[in-house]
Structure formats: structure tokens, C-alpha cells
Image (cartoon, rainbow, N blue to C red):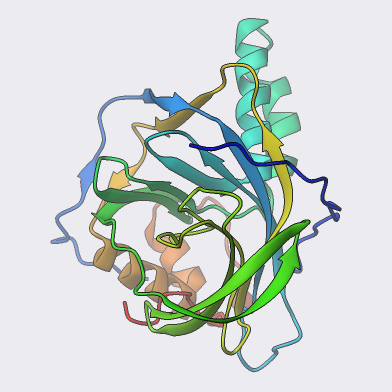
Length: 283
């Protein structure tokens, strides 16, 4: 891989704005607690991810600071705060600090964070996703299929890099992307990949979802790219996960009550449906 010059980007502060399941679902409760090393991080790219949760309120956005961590064989897309929490937990475990003190620091960090973690090319040829629906974490994999890109005329500058333009229809949405040929990494935020350079900026036609690179970090000392699998995660298919997510959004209170993990009565407002505007409309 050829070298490229790292530019200094302006990093902005990102704040967050704001069931019933069949017993016959073939879900699997994982039995082992495992952290698997997938390689060494060579570069970490910071993205501002912006979402429109309610199509009837297009000006109300959720914003997340997300890391794309890249190794030779795979990559990981994860909330910046999740990485901070993992680091705190590791350091506290080494120092034998009481778990209550660790929780008092980590729980506020994770509040309103993006729960989705995406591993590209893990296992080889697959994408593995970890995500949460209260009160459980789910894990599923799918084929690593890259979008069918159309390279089109146009250029702009993102994070100090000259970028070229491309478009695609992917997972039910029409996207316009800007990629940097001078960063020879065929990857990008979320599940996007497959262009001749890093995807620096991408958004769908309705601007319900957008991703912009705002920072680049090169790693000069060994740092592990890893996947953490908890015994509490539930293995499902991708279709099962989205079905469960849709049911939860339709009636959060009913879903939470059915988990058996609720020990206080919910207010009536908890049973109201939430806006549902997933990035993958084709699922």
C-alpha cells in the first residue's frame, strides 16, 4: 500500500439529539466470552454520522462520532465512545478497580451512543454486525457485498483531500459518495466499500443519512483491531434482527415488558410508537 500524506482536519464536537416475538425464532444464545484479535490498526478515520430518525421532522437529527479502524484484512466501524469505554474497562481491570467505579464512568459515556458495530471481512467474505434492542445485544452476519458504483464527473475537497464523485443505489437508497484516490483504502463508513480510494463523504438523496470524514489518525505503534463477543449476545439472522427492531419501535413498552427484565411499571408514553426510518429500506 502506498503512503499518503495525513492532513489535519477540524474535529467538531458531536452531540446526540435526542413486542412481541415468536418463541419459535431460531436464535442462539452464545456460550463463551471472547475477544478475538483481527489484526493491527494501521489507520483510524473519524466520521460524523448524521441520521434523520423521523421523516416528518427532517430538521431533527441524531449525530454520532464514529471510528473506522482499518487493518490489512478487515475493518471496524464503531462509536468513538464505545472505544473509550473499552479502554477504561481494560485499564480498570488491569488496576483491579472495583466494577462499580468503572460503571459509574462508562454508563454515562454510552448513553445515547450508537449501539451498532460493523466488522467488514469478518469472517472472511462476510460482514458481522452487533447491535442492541433493549435489553439485549444481537449479532448476525451477511455476505460482504459492495455497492455497484457509477463513477461520475465532479470533485470536491474533504478533510484536505481532493475527492472524486460516485453514485450508487444500495440497500434501497440512492447515495452520492466522494472518495479520495490519494488514500488507497477501498473502504468507508458503515457498510460502504469498493471505490478506488477511501470514501470520505456520502449521503443518500433525501439526506436522511450522511457520513463525513472529519479526522485521520495514523498508528505508529501496534494497536489491536478486535471483536468482543459476550455470552449475553443473541445470534440471529439479519432479517430476524430488523423484524425485532421494527416490532420494538412499534411498541417499545410492550417489547420491554416482554423481556422479563423490567422491575418497575412503565408510563403510558413508553407504549407509543417511535419513528422508524432505518438506513436499509430493502430489508
